[in-house]
Image (spheres, rainbow, N blue to C red):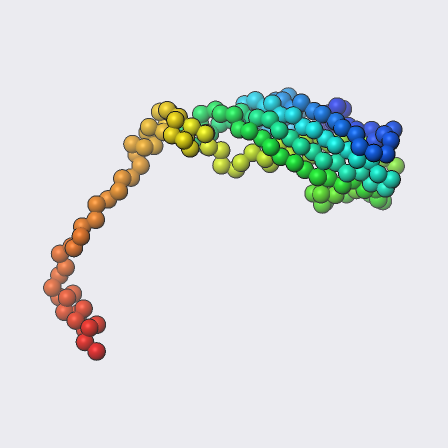
Length: 178
């Protein structure tokens, strides 16, 4: 996968302390990952990088909306996104990203690319079941919803006392006779 240069942070020239980066994420970003679940995206990512002598701490905060299709009605709607991610970067012998909260870079590295973390932060903040808000409050009018309502099974009326074969009544008497 080709790395997008605007998401590469050259940390070697940064002073110790906090540094802020802002990213505007749209559909072009997700096209790079060949992710086509979103109709459109408008997400702002604030990245706070705190450089310390032996490590760096990155705090990602994403907020905005993504437009996607409802799982029930297939109607498009805007899903609000609010998510955070905390990442610690340390230096070691070799690259290691096995731990989701810790990234180990080789000692000679001078930059870090954060595009994968931003991608995962946004995609994982979308609920697994995508339901249009109009379905939840009953305000959405859709042909699909009307058809679902028409085909849904109604409540069956229960008969109070069904006619029981008298032979079974004799067997019930065995339970009462002890």
